[in-house]
Image (cartoon, rainbow, N blue to C red):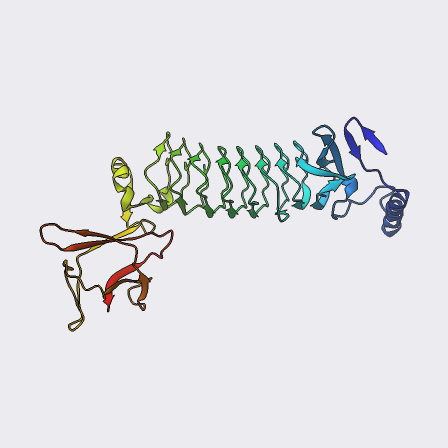
Amino acid sequence: MNTKPHTIKRSFSSIHLLSRLCFGLIGLIGLGFGFGFGFASPMLSAATLDDLQFTLINGGTEYAVSAVNPSTISGAVDIPATFNGLPVTQVKDSAFASASLITSVTIPASIKVIQTKAFYKCRTLSTVTFAPNSQLTLIDSNAFHQCFKLQAINLPDSLAQLNSSVFENCSSLTSIVLPDSITYIGHFAFGSCSSLTSIVLPESITEIQGQTFYNCNSLTSIVLPKSITSIQAEAFKYCYDLASITFLGSAPTLGDNVFLDTGSNVGGFTITVYDTHETSYDSWRTSYTVDVIPDPTAPVVLTALIGYNPSSGVLSVISEDEPSSVTVDLQHTDALEAAWTTLSTSDYEAVTDSNTNSVTRNLIIDPETSPTGFYRLSAEQ
């Protein structure tokens, strides 16, 4: 076994070596020696364990993986979850950097960290697959920088941190799914992802770092969760086709040139906010077009002075002699033209006016427990 300090590299078996020699001879025969003793270019095939090396880390209890030779490893790379009976927990710093012949990689659930420049300039890498129950928490800086063929990626639910320039210049990346577990996305993380058209930010994110979406010139719309409190410098600079930004919360603080040239290809962009946060955007109106819409997630408060006359079926003011046999229900529908459905309103606050003896029922619809939509009051005996 060929060993280095804290490094293990699997050697070829004699059978494996013999088979390669035989392949080489067959290749020469097939060429008819027409090119002397020159060898044909290697065929693109799946990588094997012989293409990988494993370095002991964490006191010799785990392994980090890398390519033996990034310039020759090719095809599909399937990283093993264990080696020599120990877990493989990291993709090493620059492990596959400039491995221009690999086309796909499968990351096992055991991997916790993908280190800096791990797949930097893997220019033909098009598919990255994370195994179920992934333990991955960190993808470090420039890990997939300039992976020009990478089109889409679903990040595992365990991920907490994306550092700077992780996907910078991934010019074929059209969409990305971010897990709810992620709390930090570094600056320029998606910088110059010129094909990115959609991304959903989870509420676990509180800040958008500088230049995060710099020059994402195919991004047409984005929704920012209510958790966002700060957007740093040039975050959306040169997003030429970005026509709509929806803020679900109150106005965040802005760094310099956050929206420089944003939407310039589409005649500018519109900021959409909920009416419950409208006043916090008042100062933005001098620079941006602000569209205000009702907040569908806010509790709906209905105050009603109602009474019920069984003979006429008319609802009116409830007085102190309200019939105890009357049950007041709240009816709900998702759309005005749909059939009404009834929700119980047993939980309500009844306030009696001491001057008129009328009763006000304050009915609060909480979207956490009740559906949002249109409501009306009715009564039954």
